[in-house]
Length: 243
Image 1 (cartoon, rainbow, N blue to C red):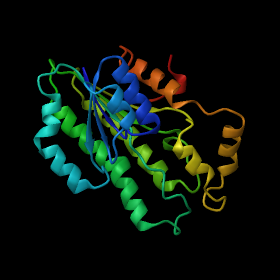
Image 2: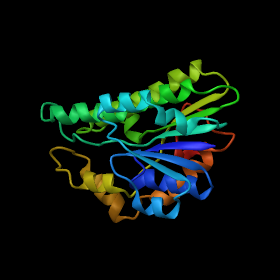
Image 3: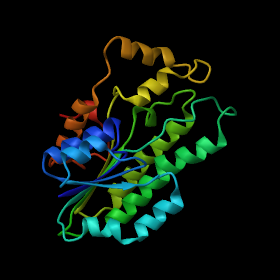
């Protein structure tokens, strides 16, 4: 098996990539910046592409080129984990940056859908494909100040539901909410103003009370599930509810 992981340079993406690499799975990491630690520790297994996935013309050109197809060539099963995402803009409607809206929609929706399409195109009964969208509880519960983020994650959920209806037996997909994880995004949330994000105090309490999951523990559970026979039974799921 080979795996493609977006946003592998830090946070949950880095932990997911590490968990796969430790199992001897070859990983292609897609991010604006490389992961120096993983590249040193797994030089024979990690391949990296410096790519800003919110720059859609650049993504289109890369998918149309040969490097994407070469990575998946002559392999059996393969895995795509669409992890890269942005929280911003945080703020009430009318106070959001237009540039930030366009960037987040490009990264959180357009890029994973385009990657999923190109990834599935190379699949067959002999080349099984598994697609994971890293979703969020915000896809299923609205938060004031997070309208763009909530909408973008809900789009991934519904994409998985639709693809699951049409997918052949060799293609499995699931949009998985990983829970609340102690990453840079949580720091970004706590740095928001209450005017922009009225629920800030709740997330401050989660950090203060030690209720944030570690990226490493979450990645281990996620990878175990994705590689198991149970993966794909539900198009949309919450990692905290999975065995």
